[in-house]
Length: 126
Image (cartoon, rainbow, N blue to C red; front, side):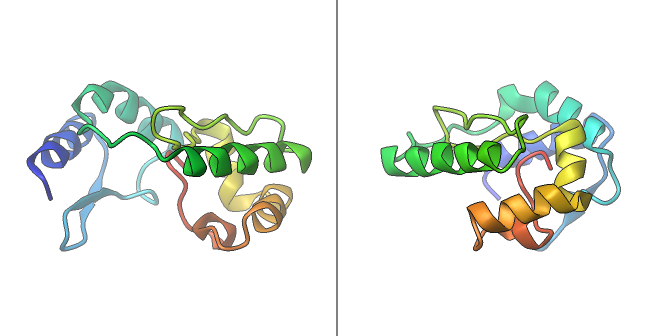
């Protein structure tokens, strides 16, 4: 894990999050932390995130298309992707619904069948 990521995850741990070490580095244990705690810690530690490469315009367009599809499927609170990274920050109630609400899960499968979240995987913040 790069030094920048190490500092970021150290910060998340200092914010009270339980972390896992998967051999390649630390990760947030999403089953041991609430979505609210994860969101608050990520917000507090955001300044320590290592710099990211500018997003490929095609990837950003795909992320926007995905958000539009989710909204068309009735998930009106699905957030816009970050224009700098293309990441779609999913926190709080929506993060919980991604794992348990059949309507949200069905929308994920329809909008992006290959997405890890469509089968209970992870989405940033979720």
